[in-house]
Image 1 (cartoon, helix red, strand yellow):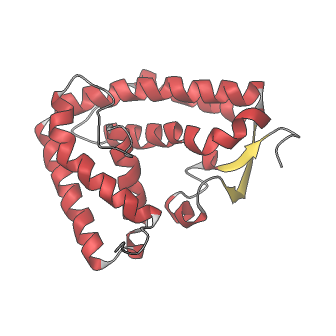
Image 2 (cartoon, helix red, strand yellow):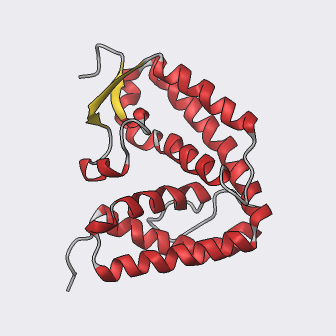
Length: 199
């Protein structure tokens, strides 16, 4: 017998727990995109932090047992990164570089052919959300953020918004997640490209 279908948030929690448990091995490894099980995303700090942000913001939608699991996973993660501060910093900086490249490509694709690439934007914009959570983490002690990386993200944002029509009523992801991403802070998740081909 199959149980009730899991919500996206419950799936996030399952993945978060696995990532928290594997974080120590991941930080010691040379891989930026660590392998996980079948039907799972690649293991990265940004992937963990993106889900943690969402789960914390929306934890009232979880059962008490699920909230307890979230707390335990967070404690595991915090203990791991505090024990591996330098490795965490290094891995996060590497991922920021990779996500900058991904986001740059997505901006270029939308500019060249918005109609063709718009259907894939929901996935592509994950790179920008991960940049946000990675920079947020590195901006707080004991970590340090490379200001040059922050400047590059700001320059990309300028390029992005030059061809983006912001609209606080048009959230690009599942509406259930909107409360985790206020438009003032995550403007790139609200709107559509400035193209007559996009309805």
